[in-house]
Structure formats: C-alpha cells, structure tokens
Amino acid sequence: MNQLSIYEKVNAGNRITREEGLMLLQKIELLDLGEIANVIRFRKNPKREVTFVIDTNPNYTNVCNIDCIFCAFYRHPGEEGEYTYTVNEMIQNFKNTASNGVTTVLLQGGVNPALPFDYYLELVERTRKEVPEVHPHFFSTSEIEGMAKVSGLTIKEVLQKLWNAGLRTIPGGGAEILSDRVKKKISHLKGTSADWLNVMREAHKIGYKTTATMMYGHLETDEDIIEHLEVVRQLQDEYHGFTAFIPWSFKPGNTPLHKIIPTYASSTRYLQIIALSRIYLDNFDHIQASWFSEGKKIGQVAIHFGADDFGGTLYEENVHAEADFVNKTTIDEVIHLIQDSGFTPVQRTTLYKTLKVYEKIQAA
Image 1 (cartoon, one colour):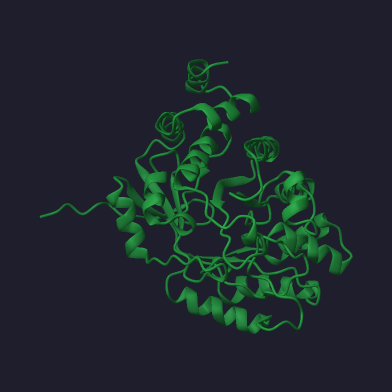
Image 2 (tube, rainbow, N blue to C red):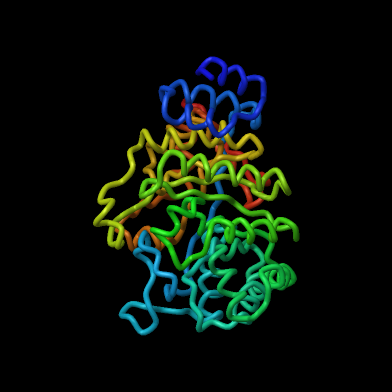
C-alpha cells in the first residue's frame, strides 16, 4: 500500500479500507489530501455551489443526568442556572425566529427525566401546526433514549410516535467519537456506540433522514477516528438515511475535561478531518464545513478541502457559548463568505432542497 495506489483507487471510484484511511490521515500532505477530496466533492456535486440553511439552535432544557465531561452546558436539577421551558414558550421562540427568516429549528436539550414523553410529542405536533414555515429538526439520540426510559416504550416505538406527530429529521448529536474506549472516559453514562447507531438505524428504517456528526480533539486516537468513519459508512450502506456528515473540534472552556485538554485542535487538523471524511465516506452526498466551530476563515478554506455545505446561520446557539466559544454571523455575511471563496451560495432546506440561488453580482 502506498500513496499513489490509494490515489488511483479513489480516482477510480473504489472504496478505501481502514488501513488506507489511517495512512491518509497520518502520512499524506495536507494539500494532497485536500486535492483528492476536492475531486470527489465535484464528482458528487458538480456545480460550483455551496449550500447553507437559515436555522437556529435553541434549547428547551439544560437539565441533564448523564454528566458528559466534555460539556459545559448541562445543569443538575435544582442547580443554579438550570431551566426548562414550557411548550408554549418554545413555540413562541419558534414564531419569533420564523419572523426573521429561519426555516429550520435544530432543537436539542439535556436528558431531563422530569419531562414526560407527551411534552416532546406536543412540541412536535404544535410546531407543525402553529409554525408550519419552520422545519422541526429535533432531538439527539441521547434524548430519544431518555424518552424511551421515561415512557417505557422501545426506541422504535418512540421514533414511530414522534414520526406520527410530524417529525421527519433528527440531528446527529450524541455521537462524539463512536469508540467505546473513548466513550467510557468522556460520557460513561450516555451509552455505547452501538446505542447511537441503533437509534439512527431504527430512525432510518422508519424513513427519517438524519445527520451524522463527530466531535474530535479530546481523548481519541487516529484509530478511533477511522473507527467512527467506518461504522457510520457501514450504517449508511444499509438505508442511506444520512444527509450529511458534520465534524467539529472539542471546545474545552468551562468543561471538566478542560484540565486534561486545555487547548483547541488545530485548523490543520480540522482540514485533515474534512478532507478525509469526504474521501472515506464515499456514500455520503454532503460534507458540512463548520464556520461556527472553527472560525469563518477556516470554514471558507474547508470548502476547498471537500466540503460542499456551509452549515447554518445559527440565529441562536447556547451549548458552545457555555464553553466560552462564540461565533456569530448573518445571512448576508454567509452569502459573502461563500462568494468570496469562489462559489455560488445556495439557500437550502434541511433535506437539501434548493430554496434560492444567490448569483454573484458583478462589480461595476
């Protein structure tokens, strides 16, 4: 196995192995990695376009009982700063953001055992009925597992009832690194990699579309990253239920893990991960660049390293803010960032349907 043979294999449209993926991550120069990733990106998405969604990421509760050591967001019941909003309050939040052009609400919270399953069903049903202009992109796998425990239902039954209420897509949060060696250290109460994959598999069987995510830059090894990509790729082979893959780096501020990992992963590492994801995940249509977690300039660079999507505008975001990491943008800025990178911005839906193409205005 050598660099040339891997390049030839990828260029021929053939799947790389774990060993080849590890070699790409550890041995290949960054610009070479980006070049081959870009070839695949344009093979899958030939137009010189980069998509984005106008979205918001509010939270209905920060009460949580799974104590992940990478998280600065959660609070225990009764702890100072804990909150849980009513369904009425969340619906008003959605109406307010919809009036600002938001089309997707990415809603997540802590795993709050005090909330009955009916709370979640009402939230979905009323969002569909009262704020039809927004798409509910609700609940991580951990929250869905929590709903199953509270209700006594199976994961499949929970997902089916949420589907019947009107939910159609689920965000990929809760994956972190799909390596049980790592999960035991950073989120031992959260469940195993198989648990995350099982929720996603059951969702895909029903007909849900979901995203897949990866949070790196903490206690994982290169081998753990390859393991994550491999199991996600295998599940995508089964139902093709993932719309996009979204990696981001761990933010240590105010987290228990900060004492062990006090600094951010490098921008070089992020570009490696983006490019490798595009190459390894040959059955994914979209790779998302994260201007929010990595900075706007690196987000721009990432769309030259295999990414074809620029994520969302994030009208509201609280989880990274609790870790003292805040990036803000506007719709106009996202459009200009994409245009300045040499691409045509395309506003999309959660399911990657085109809403608006922003043709570049020629200078006078």
